[in-house]
Length: 353
Image (cartoon, rainbow, N blue to C red; front, side, top):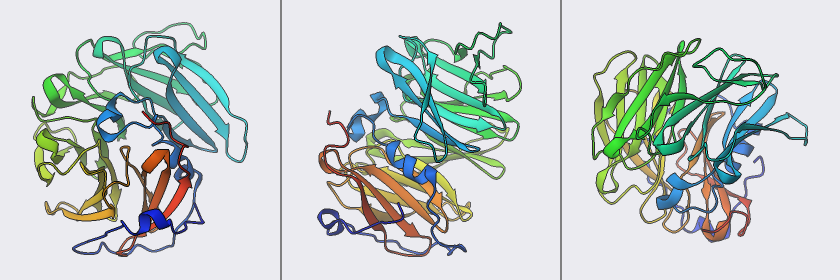
């Protein structure tokens, strides 16, 4: 990732049109293991934007001196892999057996505990946890013998979840958001130390949501974004603990085409999305302003998976599958109106649908 180089086939289609610049943050670009593996995280079986919700891509976190990956395995199982940084040896665990997992998992770390959420049988929403280093996986709903087996704790029963979940640590609570029944957007919450999952809190009602959501903690707020009706893109925010939700439309009709990615950046929010023309766009809002600016990271016909995005030093990396099963990474410093583009993997590296 240090050697971001020009890709002639894409540079001609890069069109960045930022209306204003974000403040430049101190420090240059710092390559990290998570940025490199972030690129892998969008290799979701070659799915197009429209197919992404049914894909089986990985979730990846940095956990101390290890990198942890969770992914849907064969026959709708759930698997977990981990490696010590600097080692090429990957260890594997079976989290849940066959016919248990029906979405890309979401994974976070809380101190020395790993949490995983995924859509379960009959559109339920299931939850798993383990202590780092032991990888003996437990249900949160009951006190059971430590068998080393992964077992689910149900967040929400059948008919509740219709997308990959998004999960965050919000103070001392764990929050999980998902596309709910009838195209709604809902989230659930529990104290991190016990199993007391709340009833669903509605962020947006029926007919509002058509993708997996992305969720972040933003100071004393929780922020959500998802694809809306008629290929619109929406952003929602609520104060932690409040059920009062404030919606903002980020992009108009026939503009957004994939599940979005979202990060907190320099006091504002950045959202990346693959458009209906398979271009890669970026949107940002200065903290709480309610005004969204738009830019183009890569032009039409360049992006063929939902993006992944990470804050990296003083700028942003955005990565997505490219044409013919390739994989590209784009990087720009905050305040710089030019994204560099690098080929992470050549054509044929991501499976075609």
